[in-house]
Image (cartoon, rainbow, N blue to C red; front, side, top):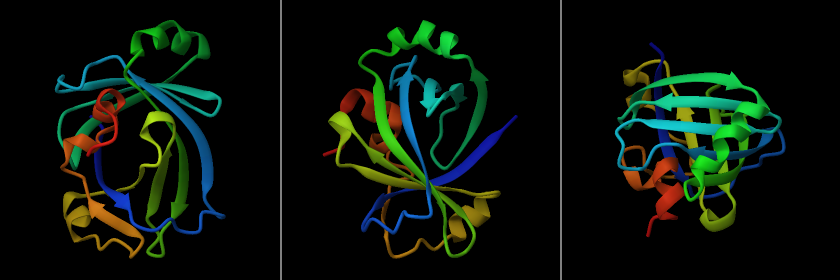
Length: 155
């Protein structure tokens, strides 16, 4: 079983992203926001994925497999009304940890969120975010991508 341990924050000040990798992401959900688990389709540049995520906030099960463009397109229509588009910038913090900063497009613009993954819960809880990170929204379900895909930007 694969476990994801991550924290999510609003972005207070956009950092210098000149050294970060950039990907164009579109994702859609085959499950509704009310389901305890989520089944997601994701296109990241020219690669395609099917991902299952369990319920939870900071710690949850995650299983992902790469799929073909044809498989993606077969199921994509079923995600209508439950989609997210964003630019993802992947970089490295001064402490060596990797961050993923999402700049949302379309109806979710100008929202910006940043996530950091950890090896253990203790490591996640001990993390001191850099100054450019804003409020911690890890446990705020309104900021889950699957919720925002149907409900929009949290008020």
